[in-house]
Image 1 (cartoon, rainbow, N blue to C red):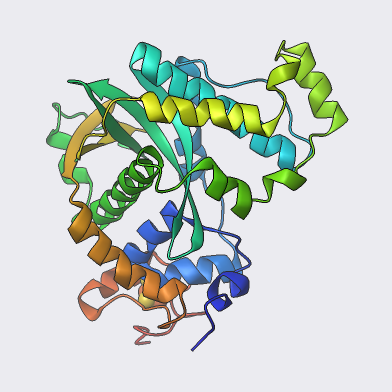
Image 2: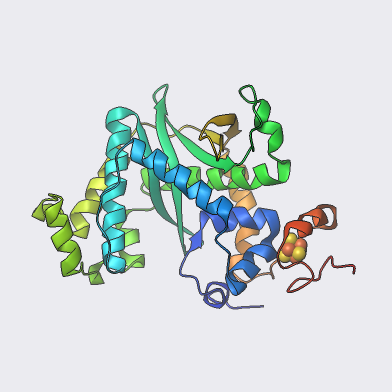
Amino acid sequence: MEGSKGVLERLKKNSILATDIASQFWCELQMELNYIHGREFNKAMAGGSKVHKELQMEVATVIDVEPQNYADFLFKEAYENYLSLKSLNEKGIGREIKVYGSLNGYKFAGKIDELNVRDGKVVIVETKTKALNGKLFEKNEGVKEISDATMRTHKIQIMLYRKMLGDLQSKEYTYKNFYNSYAISKMVLSDKFIAQLELIGIDRNLRNFDTIYSMGYEQIYKMAPISDTLVISYVDRNTGNEFASVSVDYNKESFDKILVDAMAYWTGQREARPVVKEEAWKCNFCKFYGKECKVWWAK
Ligand code: SF4
């Protein structure tokens, strides 16, 4: 059994991502092996990120600058987050919002696809893409295209976002927590990046972390209460059209219980689990099957 730092160190990770925890609910062992042996960036992932980029551009919250180091990257992200949250509060919609938090003392991060205001509440929307290859569906008929096992991972992911956003709004996790765990005081923007900020007209007074983060957190504190009804939107990767929409009810207590078991892996209390026998069909889609993983290998 590993020490509490062991798992992240072994996987060469700095923080746990919401997508890591969602992947645990597909196959925890596969998630681990992906970190050890490297994940392939495939065509489906490229198509998905193109759809997300286009959605973000629709609400104009991307700034055209090229980070030269990690500090620049964090600043660009913080500035875009501020613009997205401001857009949420002023226009009722914000996209691609990076959220940070803490789980059992571990750094935890994720990116929310969309927040929008409906009936006076902020609704979290997660967009998932799938190639329908020309198939057409009446609204929500296409939900049959998504298997229960796949949808389960999507539900976990969106519930994590609900939890993180709730922690931010209730000040359970504040700028101070973030500042300390990411050592923001040591971050220095590169000269090249500062020159780019100047070029696109970002005021000198805004070019520091304290200001830009406090502006972002202010937007979180003034946004409407967060809805416990979460929405997963399924979009055809080729056309960008939504073919199904699924509502998910969030219950903090039952979700916290689900997380206890998931976190037992990260805290080193147990090894990564393979899929259960009833779900061994998943192995047919796994690149580690019969190679790094022979749990259900019968040949
Ligand atoms: S082969 Fe099966 S059990 Fe092994 S990592 Fe892949 S999905 Fe998991």
